Image (cartoon, rainbow, N blue to C red; front, side, top):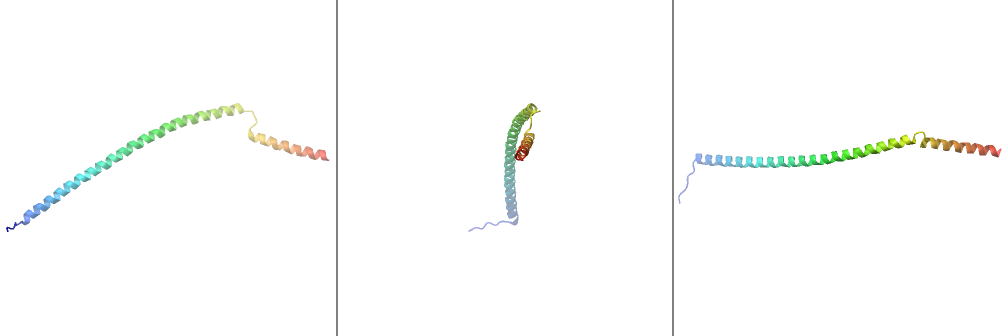
Length: 109
């Protein structure tokens, strides 16, 4: 049986080559992973832009509706100007009730 003798130089060369191949493979995998992560971020960024656009559209639509409601309220308040408001009406009811009580007490006497 013949034994193959491996010199230290050959062993060193094989180990270096193994490390080089491993490093190249690892670098390629790291770059692939970084590219995949970046693509994922780009997809999420695009989705977020689409969602924010929808929210902004809704805000414009709702804002327009709220402006219309506010204008209607202003118109209603203008129409009711000069008409007794709720607070004043309640005060008048209290005064009438007080007068009724006073009148009733005068009639008893």
